[in-house]
Amino acid sequence: MALSKVWVLAEAFEGKPLPIVLELLAKARELGDSVEAVAWGGDVASYAEELGKHGVTKVHDVGDIANALPGVPVAAAIAAQVEAGNGPDALLVGMTYDGRDVAGRLSAKLGRPVLTNVVDLAAGDKPTSCHAVFGGTQIVKAAFTGDTPYIFVVRPKSFAPEESGGGAPEVVSIDVPDTGATNAAVIDNRHVEERSGPKLDEAAVVVSGGRGLGDAEKYSMIEELAKMLKAAPGASRAIVDAGWVPYSYQVGQTGKTVKPTVYIACGISGATQHMVGMKGAKNIIAINKDQEAPIFSIADLGVVGDVHKVLPKLIEALKARS
Image (cartoon, rainbow, N blue to C red; front, side):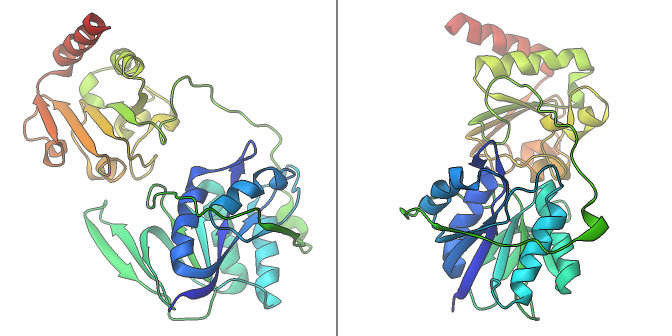
């Protein structure tokens, strides 16, 4: 039996829902008879129609929260709806910074548990969630036994987005109760990192580098190869921690989850936490001089060789073809 009403936390950036939101909406339609969204900001109306195309029939608009961090006002607004008897049976939240913040605060306000790091959900009056544990080597299942709403925090790329053909949803305003000093924190400056080429978590091809590159200067080979393949450059946690590249390049359990058509791992041994973030790629190519490297266990094509010799030859061959 499906749930009656499922809400999705609809985070947006520059007037567009985040990719994780559209992924969650596809699953929400499987779980519930009615799918609604919770959104905030001064531009909700500009992307409400996009939410409608993915099955949303009603958008609960928290309104313009100015420079406040979303966690406090959004959690308070949802909690007020639940306490008034207008809440959902389940709330799906993306595993983002703001998503985790909202889910945690809502859990505390309502006295309800939260299931996090969800990678799949099975429909039912008490949906069963799947969670990756031990670095993604095992999957465990869980279900709520208490009262609704059931709060699920879902990893990106767990579901495929799919339009439902729905029309423009109804947009209704919901109030934010007085939150006092807990809403004192504000954002006084924003920095958006400028990167050319496709986004790491949306790219069809990803080329990642690891410790096997030797030093930070050698990462230029990754960037050059990525540019030639119209790919996004990525990195292992090891070289991010070493300061070779920014955190935004990191692929893995504590970085971004990617599911490209092709993933090329260069000088990456294949730590479990890294493979969790990329093993969903359709085709995995690994280049490593250690033939016993764990990355080869999931690779569709493995090249046992020194990246310092293999990558220049590959780049040279691609230049000859262009």
